[in-house]
Image (cartoon, rainbow, N blue to C red):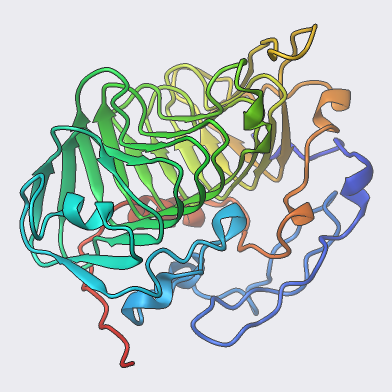
Length: 381
């Protein structure tokens, strides 16, 4: 019960966040007052807190089609997708050929890809996404099955409002980000039932945000960092927020080497563990809701040996303001391990975080995942 920050402090706990929480002009969400010291986190009062339904980040990105670009929070905040390219209209559910999603994703120029059809696209092979692409499923209901998307050596990709279900075969991930891809934002997607992972981020890929996604009916949900031999994964940086991990078995996420900021996620009824830290990983878990089912321990640690080190080690998880309910045990390690964790304010000055409450839990349940929403209008040039 309660949160885990309690008496656990390190040197950075007595400092304020770097930067402030400004009130930018629309379409940004209005932040609350400047945050207090980290050792006793507080949240906007009822006088300044907006209505809960509007407290999710970037609530106004649907005001116009391209308002989505560059609006991610966290490590993927620079992702612009196909902002500077023309619209590409997907007019067929065929796996390939003119007007197909695959045809648009392989083109080298920036494109903002939208759909004129609804339905299921069966992928017979991985669909490679090239740089400067937005795959925007708003306005239609698009499900990808068979295989998934592969983001290989690309940058500035936005994936929004898609369903992924029923991927088959070895190494079948819904979204596979490797190698050396960066500035990626995955927002409002529903992912379930693939033979391997739902989202894998490995082999030097970095500066990625996963937000408002719904994960369900799956075992190995999200892997960050390939294996102990891939020491280049020390550069991985990922933000995961306002996601709903809904009864998935493990890896919410599992992390090797990388730095991962988790905030305002709702993880419930896992089958093995909620979050796993392995070799040299640094996880900052902030104001999340962990609700156990039969397996009570949220945090797990696995010891592995990096290829360039003589001794094996685990990773660290710093918990700040997390809520552990229905008998959940945090499973935090000793103070000296926790103190090694990074703080996200070292990398970005602002993000939208609020107290982990029942109200937030219900909002995440309602808002995470692919939704039937109108396609925003293209702004006049």
